[in-house]
Length: 405
Image 1: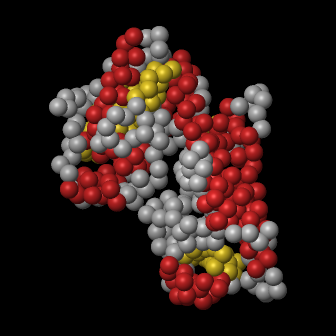
Image 2: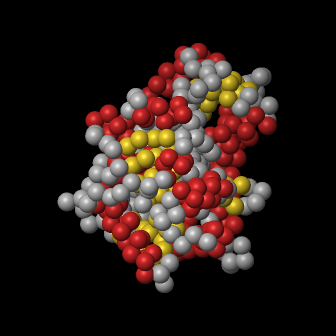
Image 3: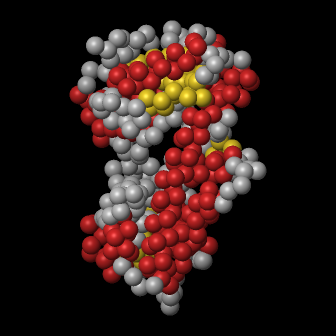
């Protein structure tokens, strides 16, 4: 029997925050906070999700969730015994560091309105950040728990987690107990049985997150480089990949070639880990970051070969999104390819139905009439294949070998 906790506050309703809020609101009182009243109204009044996630939409529509959203931080944090921080931490390429200002803003507010609350940072942060934040703020109630969520599968991955990790001060008995209670809270809400729960130091937990995502990015880069080799030597990339991945030690995860890794996590996490490794002897982590840029350059070069001899060529970009069932195209690799092509004077035309502005995107033309889009394009590039492109198969350039992911 789940013991109902006191009020839980969640700062941020992106993929991480909203999926956690929905997960916990099945059995507990949860109040989330966000900056936009329109998003709060969407959840409070319409029971609709501001992010594209079919499972979250289903839960909001069919489950009796004790979940409300406010734009008032004071309202959200006052009376909370637990505050989960899931605010954005974008990578700043100039500082070579995550922008953690939003996390710090939440911590300061919680210290003012709910000084006894346990604060659990779910946002991705640099290695060593939690300890430095504790020293900077004087707050002794902070934990760090990395998230391991796939895009468009955020709620599923909370319901069926592979592991739950909570970072704490291992020398502080009170905080170790708080970490164990938080791990139990997530495990109790999950549908998967026998979920491993690990309690460790703050810095070790931070390192787990960055190294895990960098390893996955490395796999993406490895199979992309395999695909580049196959393409330039006239080989069947799919057959090679299938043969390689039948080895149980390798497996078939993250092996479908693409234009490069992108999205919310991999680009910033790999760069942050590389920055954290300054002074540490290493070559592989730097190679992962560099490989992703090399891949985008290669894709652009292959497209330029197909445009040879055409005057005023037009390249159609079919979808900016990273994956199917997603509306996220932040840091999508195809945008890097677009930039390389635009620098060569190629006109870019985009087909992306999820765009709010249907006329332009970053100065690129948008054409969401699919038939017209295919007709006007000399070459169509697609990170992932779609049957809708079958009529223009002769124009299509994709490295998607398995028509998935």
